[in-house]
Amino acid sequence: MDMRKLVGRNFARLRREKGLTQEEVEARSGYSQQYLSGLERGHRNPTVVTLYELAQALGVSHMELVTPDSQS
Image (cartoon, rainbow, N blue to C red; front, side):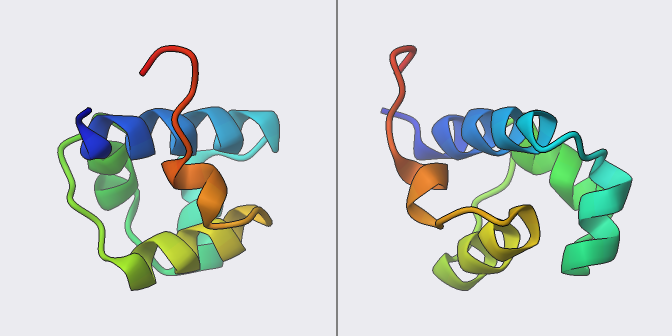
């Protein structure tokens, strides 16, 4: 299982479910839109701290970013 792709897919899904743009998450989290785009494409390897901070910006548990879905 490629965790980078899993996290990216979960992050993108949760962001859309919350009705947020990457720019809005950037404003909430402090991570650049370019970083968030790379994360969603599975090109970033976020730290545990980054996962926690991004989950906080989305208003979800950090576990939701790493939980496998049916596509994994």
